[in-house]
Structure formats: structure tokens, C-alpha cells
Image 1 (cartoon, rainbow, N blue to C red):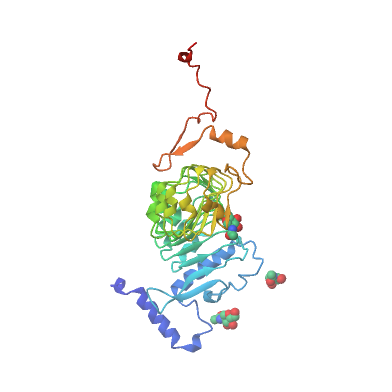
Image 2: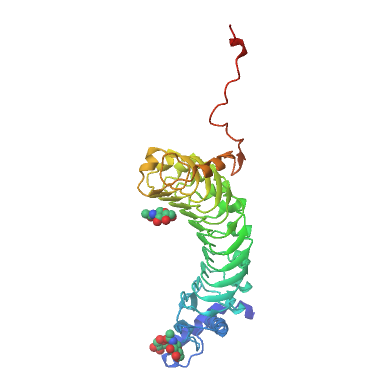
Length: 382
Ligand SMILES: *[C@@H]1O[C@H](CO)[C@@H](O)[C@H](O)[C@H]1NC(C)=O
Ligand SMILES: *[C@@H]1O[C@H](CO)[C@@H](O)[C@H](O)[C@H]1NC(C)=O
Ligand SMILES: *[C@@H]1O[C@H](CO)[C@@H](O)[C@H](O)[C@H]1NC(C)=O
């Protein structure tokens, strides 16, 4: 019948006993089993540190983990009488070390913020025990290896920031099934294509920049319509046409797909992105005339379409304040590409089919001077 005793009740009882006996305060062992586990985890972690140049963890000794720098304690969600380690925030400490399996003992943490340190290796598999973890920020460290798949087993995760590390290889499809609000995987060495379930995530921000993304933006991006505010996919070797469905993203304020290999016309549907403030499509291979309706977007503050092969823009676009249209093929405008470069490009123009992000290569246009008409034999009248 022992099992009918709830350990939680027992712990609460101990905590109450302790709190009604103030004289025991100084010589206390760790206050409860969860803080004891946290103590084990943090000491195991500290063992891995090979450098702590700012002495951030100098006070990480003794059982009172709630007093350690960067450790945030709060009452447990399931029992307000139990104090627990609810978060870790040692951002910008520049500590060198790794993440041991023991960190999986920190089962009450909601935040794990270790950005701007020198941690290496990967996330331990024991992170799958962190069932309350909401925010995981390991950005700007030296993590490497393949995508840390253990994050797919953290059901409460809302904020995932692994940018500025050395992760490489595929990004698993399952990532986009998580209910993330923000996803930052930029500045790694990931090599992947965006899967069809990409739009499933209810994210407000996705940043993929500076990776190797083979392929285009799937039309399913439109499924993020109700949540998405910022999409940043610069410098990721993306290809194909922009899908017409991006026009449905009417809450997006920042859309940046610069420094890729996108082709074809800019979809007229972009004029449906009514909240757009910053649109950057520079350094791609867009061609054709930039739709005037894009330049008329009501909140547009900054439109950058330099370094493409656009062949025309309307007066409205020319008059925008913060606009960069240089290095295109726009007749009579300053700072365009050479006519040689433009002619060579338009030898093989591409045209978006409007289906997903596929395109066709058109036959070369007819030469601009019509060939001389054949001699009209029947005009001989003499
Ligand atoms: C860190 O602590 C060591 C030893 O106590 C001391 O020599 C050093 O100056 C401290 N460094 C900083 C940045 O406080
Ligand atoms: C917590 O740390 C502060 C100073 O950093 C110290 O004054 C206090 O006694 C510590 N509390 C415990 C219970 O160790
Ligand atoms: C507009 O966007 C471009 C590209 O992102 C940036 O370089 C430029 O500084 C921005 N201009 C303003 C005024 O914000």
C-alpha cells in the first residue's frame, strides 16, 4: 500500500516542516528531491566547463542551486509548495564546455538560454525528459553534427533558436509538425529542401538564412497565413519561382528572399501581402516588369530589388523613397546592368507557370529588327 502515498504530498510535508523550523535554515540539505536532481545536473555540467572567462559560475557550488548565477527558481507548476529550477539563462557568458546527459534531470525547466557561449557537441538525448521546456536558445555556440533530433521530442517547445552554430545535413520534416512560434536555424550548414508540411507550423517568425536550401518555397507556406509575421530566407541557394500563394500572407511585415537563385516574374499576388513593410528580393534572377501593385502596398517602407534582370518598373515604383532598383535591365534608368549582360540573360528567359514554383524556359525572342520581306515577285509589272 506504500504506492498510495503520493511522493508530492510527502515532499510538501517536508517543506512545511522545514519552513516552520527556521533554526534549521543554514544547515539544510538541498530542499527537495527536485532541487537535489538539479544540483546533480548543474554540477555535472560545471565539470565540463573548460573556460569561464567572466566567472559567471564562480558561485555554482553547494546545494542552494537557486542562488547560482543564471539559475531561475520558481514554484513547481504541479505543486506550489515545491521550489524548482524553472529556467537557465547564462547568455553571453562565453563559457566553453558541453551539455552532459545529466541535464535531462532538470525536468522543471521552461527556459534554457545559453546563447553566445562556446558550447560544443550536441544536445543530449535526455532532453526528451524536459517536457515543460518552452524556449530553447543555444544560438551562437559551437554545436555541430546533424540536426539535434531530440528537439522533436519536446512537446511544449515554442521557441527554437539554434542559429549561428555548425550543424549540418538534413533538417527533419518532423520539425515543421511542432507547434513552434519562432524558428531560427540560420547560419548553420544545413542542406535540405522545404517539405510540403512546411506551412503547418503556427510560427510568427521563421529565419532560414545562410544555409543550403535546395529547391523553392512550397505553396503550403500559405497555411501559415494566420500567424506569420516575418520570413527571412536570404543567401540559401533557393531556386524556382515564388509561389503565387505567398500573396495570402497578409500579416507578414518582413519578407526577405535576397541572395538566392529565384527566377521568373515577381508574382502580382504579392500585392495581397497588405502588411508588408520590408520586401527584399535583391540578388536573384527575377525578370519581367515589377508589378505596380507591389509598389502600391500601403505599408511598404523599404523595397529592394537590385541585382536582378527586371526589365521595367512603373512611375509609382520609381518614386518610392526607400527603394533600390539598381543593377537590373530597366531601360533609361541609372546604374543598370550592361546591355550585353541583359541581352545574354534574355536569350533564355524563364516564365513561371503559376503552378507551385515551377517555370518554363521560353524560346529566344525574335530578333528586334524584322527580317527584310521576301522579294514580292508579283509586283513585277513592267
Ligand atoms: C575570475 O576569478 C579569478 C580567480 O578568483 C580572478 O583571478 C579573475 O580576475 C576573475 N576574472 C574576472 C573577469 O572577474
Ligand atoms: C545567496 O547569495 C547571496 C549573495 O550572493 C548571499 O548573501 C546569501 O546568503 C545566499 N543565500 C544562501 C541561502 O546561500
Ligand atoms: C532597406 O533594406 C535594405 C536591404 O535589407 C537595407 O540594406 C537598407 O538599409 C534598408 N533601408 C532602410 C532605410 O531601412
